[in-house]
Image (cartoon, rainbow, N blue to C red; front, top):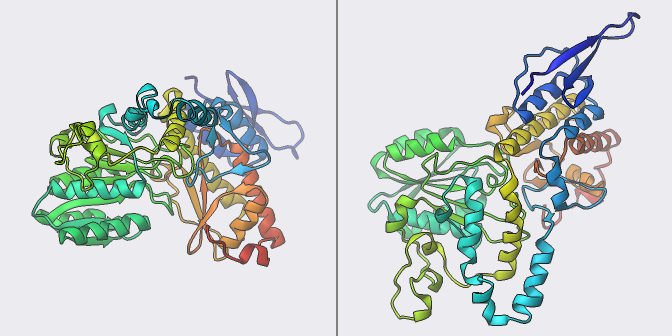
Length: 467
């Protein structure tokens, strides 16, 4: 990769400042702020050692980045509403091309005419393993270690229960105070079933809690990327520490799968669970997935022993005999329409460079934070997300005492993010279909809302059921 060169255009008149240009094989364009080159380096993998004093960014800088974005062609693979900026893919992904057609084909033909025969003819029966194999590469797993099934919360329950069964006699589960509520509820519910105790600590105190548990440590259950702040745990380091003290890890990948370059096996992870409706774009309520490392398959024992986990389900025997491998995580009949939607959405991932996706994700977060610093510094916004890109998932969360109303005002203007109590405005960056110009425009809309006090109306201050 050629290094960036900067050309200083000389000016004869003193009132004209020196203009810098970034030059690459695709051409040259003016650079009005130092960050644009740093961001480009993040995206395209080259290094620059540049010093530019000006930090006033412009929309044209964002357009310059979009023009050379190696992931930009993926945008055409999605159905995107016109005149909207969708920054909520960390809550619900958009509709990929081909999903609607796949579901209609299933309804009209596989269900509509072939009916029960489609369990064999269309291979419905094997769909959990088949879709799991599509998910596996983007989370750094072997294809026989992942199965698509059930909801995320149910998979967390199954994984954590199976983890504790691997450590009989140990009774301590370490988790985080700021974990997603469902995870926390499930952790405490499982602890009650096993007569175990839960040690809930702040994220920074997790390593110390693991060490303090000592020989009583059974499992550590954490969400890899925090749902509110986007802060990332060091999966490899914490898994290693957990193993050093005899415990087993369970990772929630809700905000990781499809957003980060996840490496479960490189981290030597034990169990993981995730959802299909966020960055994987599988649709509302899409099936989740469960990961179990191969080394645990022979001893794998999850608590809900349904017939799809039987080694011969159509023998209809009275006693349960578990199937070998990852299919032990299954329970019952697959919801085929939602599974078909998830499968269709996953097929595009074979062509996605996950390392490039992560580089763009980090660059977008840096750019958004820079815009907030530059343009919203007088409006009392805080930044809840880590400023260091490597420590942050594919989102930036702002704080404001009127966060809910401000977010509703943004949504009314076609900038879609979401709110998390008590004061978090979340903006999710899905690198496959979000560009830098959209980030500029989103912040521009936010600036206008704050300048005009447009958020301060009953329409926006009144809470809705879903925030």
